[in-house]
Length: 326
Image (cartoon, rainbow, N blue to C red; front, side):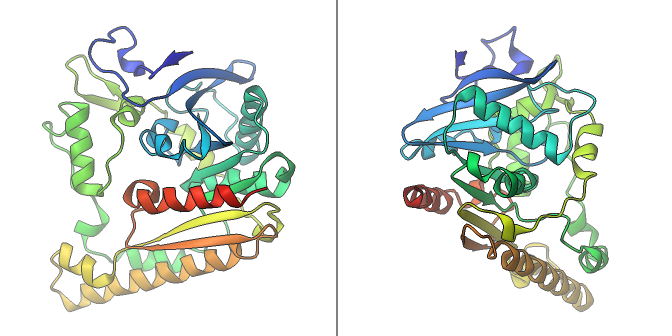
């Protein structure tokens, strides 16, 4: 176990860059030949386990996690296929990923943890709440209610008509990729969120000149995770739920930011917004049926990474949620 953690790309050159996050790192075997990176930020109180969204590692919670330590002992799990965790050729079903989490719980001797997950991690949360409620105290969905129950037919159809500038992010230039810091700045400008640099260093290779290289995770990993099209009966979740639900910026704000003057394109922006809001309201209606009870926090104009764009509110609600659990 070591303090702080060192980027995999700099393991032999620790003078170049250090992960500033105040965590310890260990590796836990979940099956033969497969070990997962587990971060431990410390803290007091009930254990809290953080699960990242698709394409990310536990390092995406650097900074955010430390602000939860007054109420929780905070851990983060990097799922198989990502970052410093093993990249086996199989084991990416929802059931197997959830089993991985349970093995880590056992290894850490966690009793009644709260489990919080972002985006695709909602699949694991739902599995835990429906099939392993006796192992956990509560669930926190960080904009993670989307699952196979969603029907994207109308949304995809109307989204395909958006202006190219809204459907395709601007490409990176060599200067944007010159360093991980410059790439982080590019993502901040284009995505509006500050992703921890450690996360980027575990997502991408470091070229010999220090620039950002290719993505480290092979494409088959996210493809396998997304292949399941899992559907969940949220009414069967038998633990308390806190669900943060992000909504996009208003159509008027999107139109202003993207300098859209064409009346037809404005109508499309409004249609996309309305369709997405309708889908999201359906998700809320489903989670509100959870047998263990659900508190939903709607965040209008939030980024999908609600714990980064709306950090203070998320932390406040999570502290309150923990205090209500038995």
